[in-house]
Length: 90
Image 1: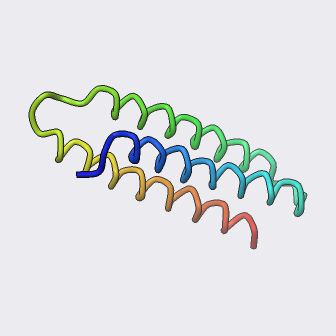
Image 2: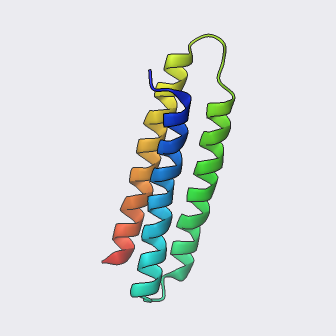
């Protein structure tokens, strides 16, 4: 099982990468898609806070499964956000 600190760092790092990609796209390719980028940024912020809340609210039983579910949700949701950013970059 990954420790709690590593899971929190992974959440912060991956969501931060989505945010930095959005800002890079926003600054280097101003193509009139700022509204879509704003919505991606808002979703990234909501994902960050919801995952941190879920990490902090770990149950007494089934901790490994709880953290595995969080890790899976993190990777799945970040992949969706990266896909949306890459579609805007085309």
